[in-house]
Length: 342
Image (cartoon, rainbow, N blue to C red; front, side, top):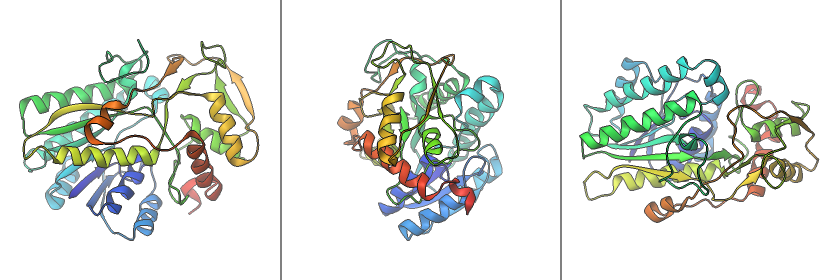
């Protein structure tokens, strides 16, 4: 199958690209490299011994996107390209709507004249907002607490309306919880620009000496140890879920499957302190911690009910928290400055 991957040089995108190539598919990546590195792409080539196409271009660039679609003629699309920092979206929301929502419209316009009607979308558990019950299943009411989440919810709505208007579409909305970890080789991993917004890369940078201590935002939540609880899932599990979703989209005996949402999580919650302890075990030294005030918008506990993905396309998360931490440390210890050292 010919699979177009937008944002394929990014953290989740590069791991998914590797899985796509290892499964024998052809791939073409579109990425503007604003929050990713071409080194990730060259390392994927080395790890898979496979080549793939690459367009350095912005998802909002109609000419670049249309040219890539026309030349590659994809049979399926995996759409990652988006801005993703929750905090930055609150401070400056307009780039998030312009990049995420408008960029998705540009991509869908480019696909209109093609025969491609299989689409796996990188969504987020942020579309659930403050949980009304746990674990969160796909029937949970949708609500958002920040502009980033609002862009994901708007993109989901666009895709749902598209599938209603044209029954030939098969669209999987993949709602991630908290992707962490790295490829077992240590050659590709998470390398955010600037100060990490997410827990795992921050811990990893503390462990490798790039930062002094982990700031824990709030230790007075209604949880076992007072710190926030999240559903962390290994990035390789997330990548494999995209491949399973594309296979599901390709089924249906030529009929479109419509638009369906799927949670990607483990179904288990891990607190910030538990994750820091597990990472300390992986790297062989304790992680220094500073307790800081709660951040606005953070919730106490959030974890998935992931059963629908297993029932529908046979996927479930396989990696443990210890394996997540070990793979992250393997990546960060081999690449203390990330991709920038190369």
